[in-house]
Image (cartoon, rainbow, N blue to C red; front, top):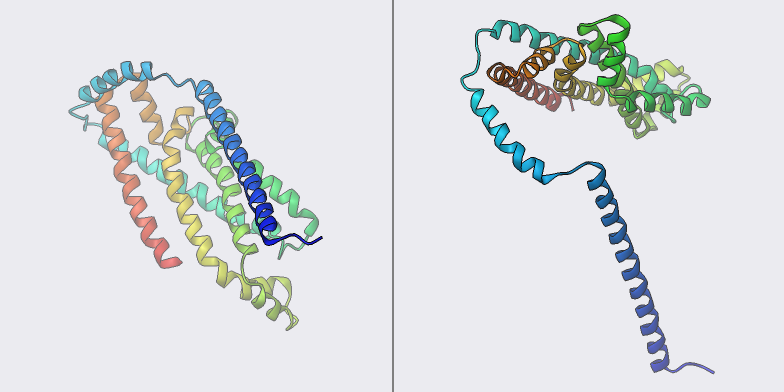
Length: 272
């Protein structure tokens, strides 16, 4: 027996209602899960608005006591800041150089040894997963206090991060030019040099500049663990509650970071 148009319309309406009910249930279940997640996170993070309300006036008092800034140690701060920039520059450069062969291994479309693809990716994940601050702490114990530990910490973390970015970009490039060069009988190195490098080099240089800029900011706190740079003076000022000196150091950091940010942005626009 065939169904009438009215019966079919009623069946379609019932199906839509059931689908709509299921959608609403899934929506509210998701809302409940997200709300529960943030409720637990709020508790684990120890959020205490009462402490904030009592701490803000104290912070305001410290800020007021930081004026006028201390300018008698500007040469020392300039030297420490130059140390920080140098740490970031050397660490980032070493990381970028090491990242290129690792990016080749970690790129599915060009890796010469496919069996090493996943181990290379896992190795990069380990480097990326450990912050430069933690690496610097470990190297302070290994090589002693000073900026060398900071350079090593920056280099290892940036190695993993930069190589991952390089590899992802290589995997997304158009492989047409690669195949065209391969058909001429060219070897793997020649193929990569002439068909791949011109395409990915601007992005690699731009990414390296970004990491240098990022590492200058990040390395300002490496002095907290004794890895040299302006962060060491920052920690000393905080330990002594010398807020005029602290204010001067923060101002120097902001000026240098802003200048490097503008320079890095200007260079990246001309590379990409």
